[in-house]
Image (cartoon, rainbow, N blue to C red; front, side, top):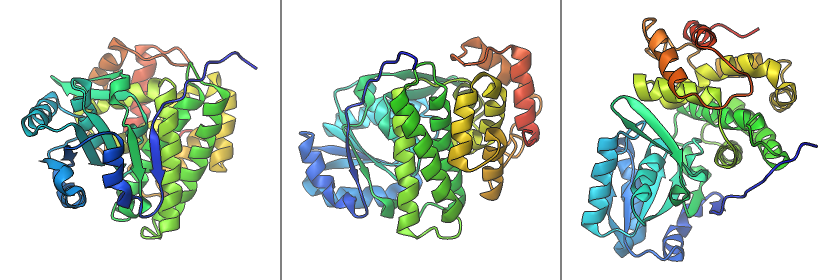
Length: 352
């Protein structure tokens, strides 16, 4: 067995149908008295429900979270938290809302309680991202790790089937890259394989039964595991490409992950055969890249960057941006190879 280092992330997880009922207790548990509730504009009703549950502990609502956390949005949220005298933030929603909470915590002492309503996984990580001047910058800082995460499957039943599928493939991408991360270890590989298995099982059923709490619990369980993986080890080429396409071309985050993942896996497959075997086993597929592509197809997801709005003329610029500050990857790559990978993703070709 190869030598490894395993560092566990310290966070409290409350999982189960109805666990939102514990919110007021959890706010008190982290030592907070005034919570700023964050959401997207569309999820303001859920933010209002959270505020009503907190009563006097709710300092206010900031329902302006948007994709890729523009620096302007982050600054406005920080100013609002300071104006209201908030000592913690409660983020209800997906990765955009959790990302906004992290942007506040990054430059303050505010604690985060996360209530995920998608399968993004950001709530289990010290990773943050901010977009400024069309470039998405990411980093890691222990300050942004939520103190408590409340996973209530009942809150995910209103997530449309298509968005559930895209968010779930995004989660699977975290586990896939964890399997061949530079700092991978046996514990994380076990969690990654189980996360892929649970998420794929749940996603295949959620399309036909979006309100089934058992199905939603499988998906949220898988998302939690995939989030642990994302928060515990490094990421590689797939995430770099998705950060580039999202931050610089404003493509939808989860759908971009779903489109790019099979092609990034096909590129890396020769360098990491053991990881590919684990992915195949988790999916019940003969090939890792083709299995991921087929899962996306079965879920009715877009299969090409062209469908997401990328223009053919953007491929050269995307390749250049991705190469300007590349992440570690198990297989070395050139700009020409990145350009070819993106071309396959742009056309939506099934990996062989």
